Image (tube, rainbow, N blue to C red; front, side):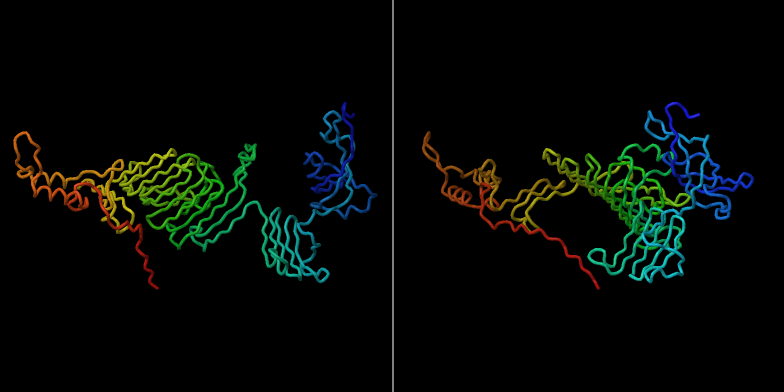
Length: 450
């Protein structure tokens, strides 16, 4: 009896014969495609035409089945199968091939155009036009000769995940590249993904500079999951940070790490480290544990534009010490700290013209050949004090009591010379006229020997 609110509707479904019941002249069919998806079975199906053609069917054949399904008029959808009415096999059918061309026996020339081979879910075809097409499931590769524009002499690969591996039969994959979509490592993980943000795109590349896996370059874009050392075989992607781009260059005991995209103070980060302990292959298979690093230099730029530079590090993991620290806050506050000499000037040869040198042993030296002013006024310097000290015995000329005492003739001459002189030499104030700074900042050339 048809349940209340349901009607029986015949539907054409697809399935595969699993066995032949000769005792009742029926076939058991597993239905894989119907309006409500895969059906629990198998279903006993009879041939729709008269007896005598049963030999045309065998186990494994794909067939079309006329099945009767319950349609819920309240929910407006199919809900179950009607087991009170038998199901019939309408005929055999072939799954849609993976090619637009017709492909048969690989040794048969098809209209002098193409030959090919097709199997269930995969195939290959070769045409006289120079096009080769291979496919397996949702993965296809088209190699096209001739053509026009960007399609001329092109190779087009379609897949969810692209991998290129160069291994040379060694314990490590010396070169590997991967671009694709990560849906989860297991069915359980896939079932937990509910939004578009849960599906991660990634491009990552590992290139070894030689057979020594300690010398390598890695690049990762999209999701933070860089390959490090021999760690180039992971099938799982864990987004531990919001980094969108990462690059690591490792050569022996030195490593450069560049990260970009993490919100906060390290939106752009560049590190130079000593590799205290290099990566080691884990005993459970391919992969590696992270190396222990000691920082030598670190540059960080925040997403607000603040800059922080640490250099001259001791290369100690954990509690490190640096010789230089420069920071610029997002408000423009500048802090410069250095354990050595600090020199401010315009160029390589301008220290003797305009410069400030702060030496932790000798103090601060300010050189200003063209004058040194505070609030627009030159500053009195030690030359004036020296002049007064040298002339203290003859500073004034003797006159009558209670009358003004003028400077002595020799003292007047010294005063006139001091006032007219440059502050750098014998002048009393920090004025001066000299050559302007060159402003040339140079770097030693790198000599390349061929």
